[in-house]
Image (cartoon, rainbow, N blue to C red):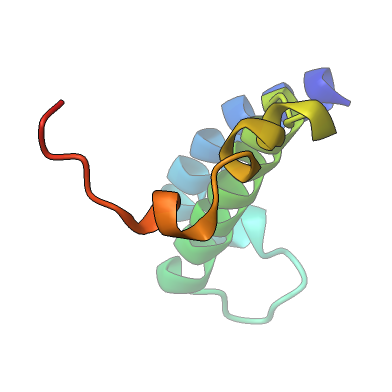
Length: 84
């Protein structure tokens, strides 16, 4: 899955550039495609693929990692320690 998303990250700028030069190649189903729609498709594809890549590579926290914050009381959490 990560490999597929990496390919999308690489191909999305290519789709963007081809859409700017020849929008008919990207939007082949439209009668009169314009550069705005073709570049929008390329940009949306890039944003979606980079987001998917970062989500797939992100290490999520395990349930045991969040317990350090919960050991302090609510009053201790709200106190500002300016002497650090």
